[in-house]
Image (cartoon, rainbow over the protein chains, first blue to last red):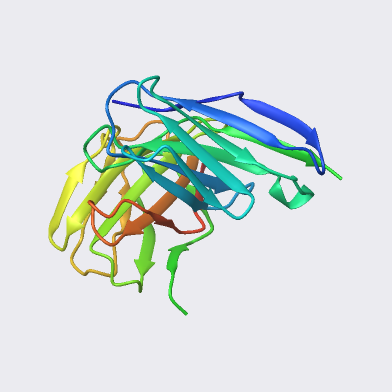
Length: 110
Length: 113
C-alpha cells in the first residue's frame, strides 16, 4: 500500500539550529500530515496540508508540499531539546486513510 | 477531560493465548483505528472502523480481530494465529474517515513470554 518515506532516518543537531526533514510518496494524495512521537508514547498531530496547498505554518513549524515532485518537508526553526522525538509523515493515497512512513528520529542537543 | 485511552500499558502473552487490548475514546468520534509499530518502523494499519458495527481490514489484519459494538470502544484481540505479536500497539480515532486528523492513545506494549 502507499507509504510516505521520510529522509533522513536520523538527524542530530544543536539547540537553536533549524531541523529539516523530508517526505516522499508515490501516488496522488488528498492531504499529507506530519505527526510527532516521543519515545514510547502515542503520536501527536502537528499539521495537515492539503493537496491544493503549498505551504503551511504553525508556530515554529513550516510545512511545504510539492505535488509535482510528490514530496513534502517539515522545518522546525530554532530547535529546542524538547523537540527531540520521531517525526512521521502520513499520506492518504486518495483514500483518506493515512499510511505512515518509518519516521525521522530527531535529537536536539542542549 | 476528553481523550483516547488504552489499557493495559504493558501486556504479556503466553504461547497459544488470545489477549485483548482495550481502546476507549470520549471524543464522540465515529472512526477508530488500530496500528502496530515495530522498533524503528512506521505504523502499519491492522483494522479500522468507520461507524458502530462496521470495521474493515487494514494491511496486516491476519491474526487479529476487532469489534465495534459501541461508538466509544474498539477492542483489539491478538489471537494465537498471530505468530509474531511482540510490538507496540496504537489506537487512534478521528471525527470520521474523511476528517483525517487522528488522535492517538498512549499505546500498549505487548510482549510474549
